[in-house]
Length: 83
Image 1 (cartoon, rainbow, N blue to C red):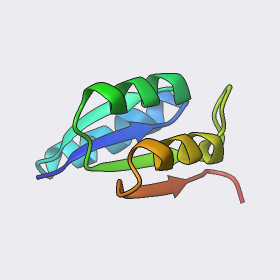
Image 2 (cartoon, rainbow, N blue to C red; image 1 turned 60 degrees about the vertical axis):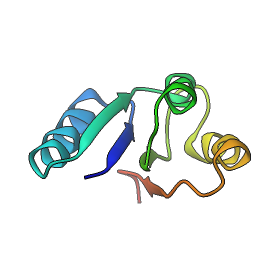
Image 3 (tube, one colour; image 1 turned 120 degrees about the vertical axis):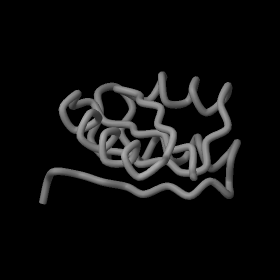
């Protein structure tokens, strides 16, 4: 299965997503904000990123722009709890 990075500042959301993904056989890494997410991408082989749009510091769009510079083919799913 896939190696997935879940990036969300809400610990409950990271836990919920990680639990569902792990139960279906995926390996999951978590990051509470952009700096940790980018560091994880630099040291781990990630095949998919679930990225919250609203994060402290860098928002999801800023993180996505940096990810596209180093890993242009990485699939990224943007998520938000806001309308």
